Image (tube, rainbow, N blue to C red):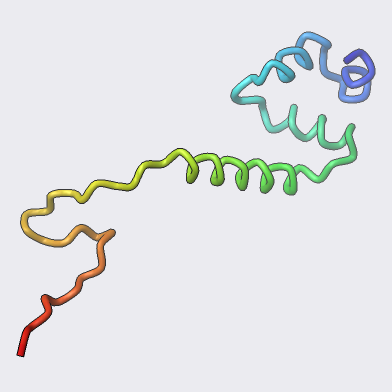
Length: 85
């Protein structure tokens, strides 16, 4: 932790907070960390977004149809009723 604090110019307390999953670090803090660790921040963010999307998709329940005054929900395809001939 001391080494990372020295490399980034951040305090050891800030590094500790970040390790404890601080929810909203400042962009400057993220840039300092990425540079110090020789990481591309854009790639880190893309991977984090992909992980969130996977986690969200795994935890979502199927959406219930919404009441729209007799119209189909925008999520549901409009399919004409079948006709018997």
